[in-house]
Length: 321
Image (cartoon, rainbow, N blue to C red; front, top):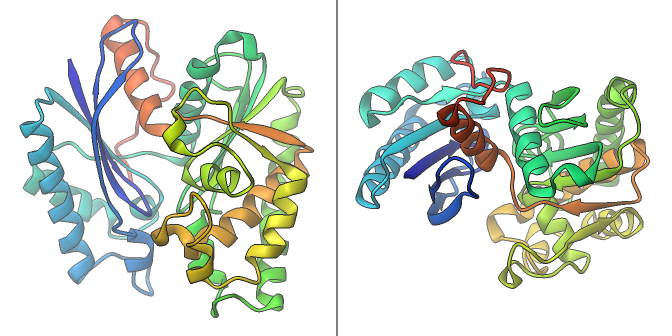
């Protein structure tokens, strides 16, 4: 079967089509994304109105048409932090569902964390032992740890790279005071959950997913995406700490020239690096692997489990906003 996944994220609206059936690895068939940057289109009240709302609806309508043209037989559609936190998110989702003819649901932060953990576990297998997983999105940071496919603990913090860039930086590059203030804020937020995550035991392997971590790994020397998903890619804490200092002195236009950094993500790379550096330091992680699978794959895997009759409801998307 060909399954479509529509991911309405804080940075992009991403359509992924995969050929999949229970018991087999999902094979990517087609993908397309639009850099909508929802979190930057929110007004002072955190609402998405006017042109931003029109763009969102248009993107979703177009994505559904493309999925149908490419032969998708079903569509999984979900929204994350930007719409989850928006006061008018529920109304927008109703409008998208009505005009695009889909069932767009909001994932809670814990849903995001658990589904991403499932994808990472399936990628690395049982031999990886206890996993500690990090994922930095546009609006939030997800952390999860556990020995099984469902993590022992799953946490979401409002520390996404786009959100922090919008809320904490006023100049490009930011001033030393702004960067220091952000660093202090991020570390205080993460420190609050370290004990909650660590009380289940030390990880045997630490893994990161998301575009932010992939970009940071690439800048510090990891293999380019063109070498395929099976090449091992890692991010080293010492190298990342040096990179944070370097990025703090670069304007976004200069960051965009770094290997693996897309122009649309260059502005928020510094904030993402601050979060990654804090997470690795506070959790005492010297090096982590970069996983090619993340939330979208986790959602597909959970759906396939359900079709096979073995899935649980523990990581089901909720329908609230």
